[in-house]
Image 1 (cartoon, rainbow, N blue to C red):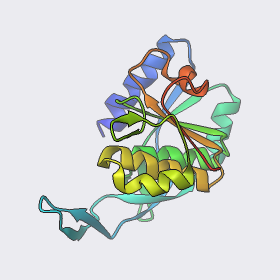
Image 2: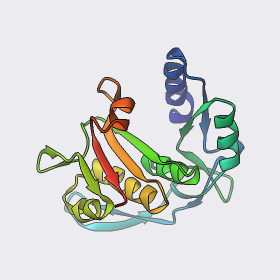
Image 3: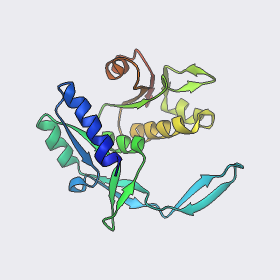
Image 4: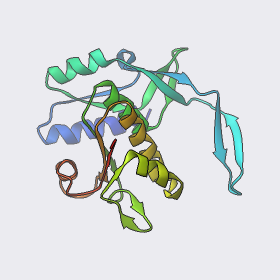
Length: 192
């Protein structure tokens, strides 16, 4: 609830201060995001062994209220969506933010998805990879660290669902979105 309340509203206020009309939502609002509750999760313990645990209150998104998002966008609002979703039993579930962004981008038939992070982009062997295909990203998954691996999985999901390119870049650099869109920073992953 910290994400849906405090953090979401901080992002909304920051965007509003830049003259961007925004509206803060969670996946619960108007059943924006519906998900199936995960029954089990596979985790890797400190010894590197895989363990199966109860899924708790986590889920996988299976439905996006695209009509609501399109309505808001048509009216000039930028939706800021917190990745808390509605289960089939009407309980709140937590989902990964990058995967939420991927599902929403695909549902909106977006051309591009930008995933912001705290590093310059995808690093392999200590070097920034400026561009790669989905096939190259898939091949590199075993060499990618855990945090970035989640972003690459989300990128691959978005690309498989029709998004043309995914940009992974640092959100701490000046002008992160415009520089990513111009391919001046970060990593571009394309379907081809």
